[in-house]
Image 1 (cartoon, rainbow, N blue to C red):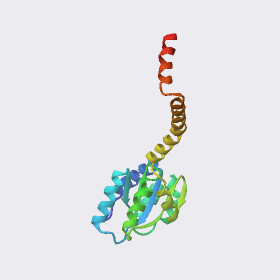
Image 2: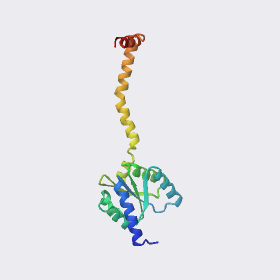
Image 3: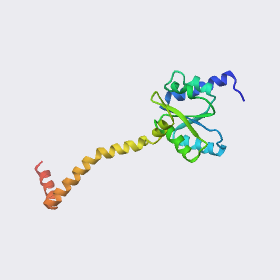
Image 4: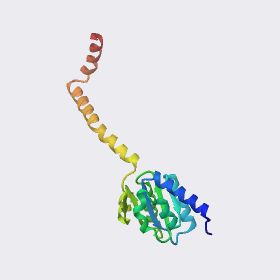
Length: 176
């Protein structure tokens, strides 16, 4: 069923607003995927904050014109599903994980940070840990020296004699 002009303009404006907020675009060919599998993919994507859309390629090219994703306009051919995400790795991770279990979904490419990505680029982006994991790793690295210092000080206090360290603390409190 074809869209009339106002419906096409609405689709273009929706996708343009998605592209303006998104950091990543992933494109994949979905030929041969069952409705049940596509529904599963959409549900997974929605839970990860990824917006998946099946669009006419001409509408998609018009929607991304002038955005950072314009560089992949020439790759927009064939039956494609477009994944937009505000998280840098979410779209790539959702599509790549689904493609591992379903050989009918073929990753075609994408864009991130104003640069076009090929299939391997999308897979490499998908292998980057999520923002939460990276923040946890950073926090662990920042806490590591502090916790090591605390363990060394505790070992020194224990070596000198476990009773001396607590006895000194009240004496300092009385002097203050």
